[in-house]
Length: 239
View: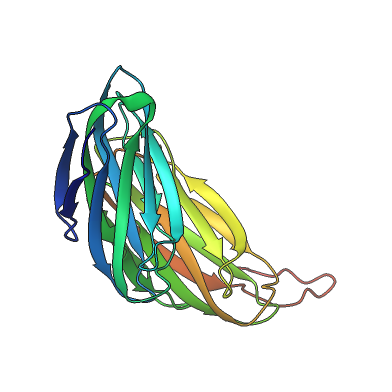
């Protein structure tokens, strides 16, 4: 019979958690602010017996579940979990629960999203993340029916990784709009067309580096369509 291993997370600081007794769990807390966007990075997970699942659940201040994820003991890649936007200000808790009464150890990094504002037609914007579990969140204003194009160039990952950077776009109400995966192989760039935006408002674009990434950087741009009309028999030069 074991009491929980307890502690608290500090933004940007890795916590090494050890559950040395069979059936033991961890319960860690952190202070959150309404609307805050956070990520959890889980790495260096080990279990005895090997390859057991470690469940991680985030609870709101009232004790109800906000979200959950998991990592396998012995996983060579870290798990990046984009925590849902915090609904209220208060003390949140994270329960870490190994399956099958396994003993376990892992590293947990709580990080705040790197947040940027994009404007259509503005100069390319450098973006970056640092630390396992951090994502970049890009906000932009769109009009009903607008066509926009997104470009990500100069993608660099540390350590080098052949898996893609996930780019997911969310509507102003938080529901899914579209997505693309961006790879580091030449030309280390990608694009995404967002056609006929369904509503006017502030959209969010979340860039999540692949598992195990400790640093990501690149340049992003947002552009409205170049528009015009063709005339029969007349060449149009489009740039």
